[in-house]
Structures are given as structure tokens and as C-alpha cells.
Length: 190
Image (cartoon, rainbow, N blue to C red; front, side, top):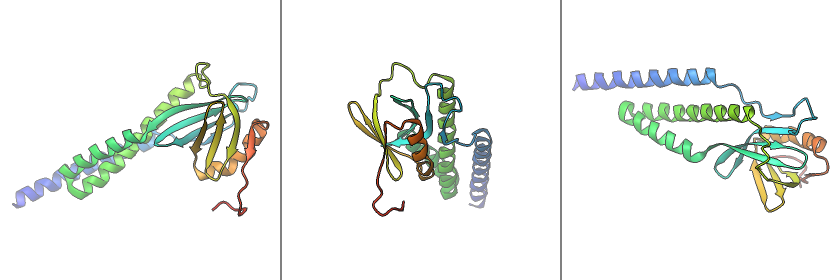
């Protein structure tokens, strides 16, 4: 019995150490997310880019021109959930409750690494590809979301709160004819 216990502790230690090292390496190789980017050269077609916008369960990068908005999918929650489940189950089998935690954390690290690689691919390509038709009528900034009124539909993109604080003045500056600020009844953002 004691040999089995020692063996399972060794396996748990190896599993935890291996995934811990993987998490550290992913953290080192994954650059910090930029956030809201306004190109210095305003003569180009891209006037504003947001690195993270969430629509339902998918994460997108968002680019604005004067008349158009383009969404490029970075990842989906389905991929994240599947990765978490697989690594958590593997962790549970190999290392018990500790393995579930380490496996789940590693899955989120891998998802962020894959998302950053997709961001890099998008930066290397033409984000405002002419085949994408999302004609922008106007934009409304809400508390932690952007509501896009397109020619044929309305899309709400959830953004991090820290982006919404700086995004209003930027949108007003780069697309003044299409930006409509939303009134916040209390005057404060909760």
C-alpha cells in the first residue's frame, strides 16, 4: 500500500512540475495584450483596433475604418472548455485534486497562447480585407460594450472595462460622424 502511495505522489509531482514549467514557458513567450490601438499613421485605412471583444462565446479582434468595422475571430469558448476538461480529467487521473487545478490553469494558458498567435497572424495580413462587408452606420459605447449598428443588423461587443474608459474620446475623434455616446443615467459607471 505504501509503495502505491509513494508512486502516486511521484506521478503527481512530475505532472505538477511538467505543467508548471509549461505554464511558465507559455507566460514568457506570450506577449502582453496591447488593448486599444490607434495607428500613428491616420492616413491608412485602419483608424482603431481593439484586441479583445467578446460576442456570445467567441473572442474577436475588432478593427474600425471610417465606414467599416471588421471582426476577426481569435478563439471560442468551446475550445477553451474542451481543453480545460481534457487537461482537468488527465490531471485528476494522474494527480488527484491538485492535477485538476494545474490542468485547468494550463488549459487557460494554452488558450491565451493560441489566441495571441492568431492575433499575430491577423496583424501580418490585411485586417480590412475587401471581401468582408460590414458597413458601419453608427457606433454606441455602453458601459462595458460597444453596440455596432450595421447596415443589416445590430451587434453588441463586450469589451474589458478598462478599454471603455479610454475608447469614448478615441471613437469620437476618429469617427465623429458615426459615434453616438450613450447617456449613463446615474452619471457613474458602476
